[in-house]
Amino acid sequence: MGYSHYWDIGINSKGWKDALQATQKIIKNSPVPLADWDGLGEIDSELVSGVYLNGVDPDGCETFYIPLSPDGSGFHCCKTRGRKYDAVVTAILCAFNHFCPEFDPRSDGGIQDWELGRQLASNAIGCEVEMPSQIHIRDSYR
Image (tube, rainbow, N blue to C red; front, side, top):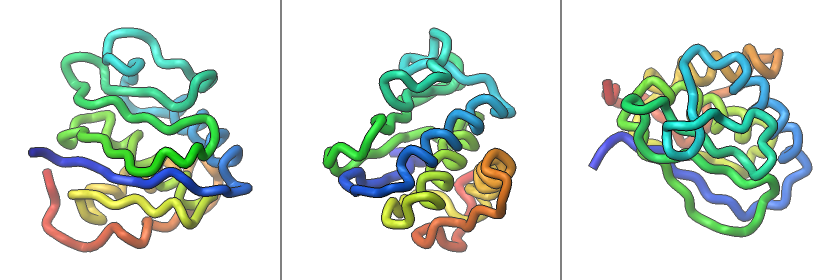
């Protein structure tokens, strides 16, 4: 059990490339240190194999992953336990939702848990990014 985010991949959206470009900007402007999938190595900021990131060990948890293109792979999730890299995960999910509205993430957290990520996405994209529709007002995880 723990604080997690959930999303489905299987969309065919024109906005996917824009979302990946926004992801690169989010990673570049990350307020927290990021690592590759295992929390030990450097993150691939060029996203050659897709988006793979984690917090820097010991502040990591599960690997956050989004492929280079919508691949029809279905359900995905990432348990961050609210650790520092959660702001980057929620920012990327907000960016994908912004460019691909059918990409509608869900979460154990509420609006207050996502606000830092939403702001990070807005700053990276250069316009106001809306909170994903499945994120509701509820007690904060933190």
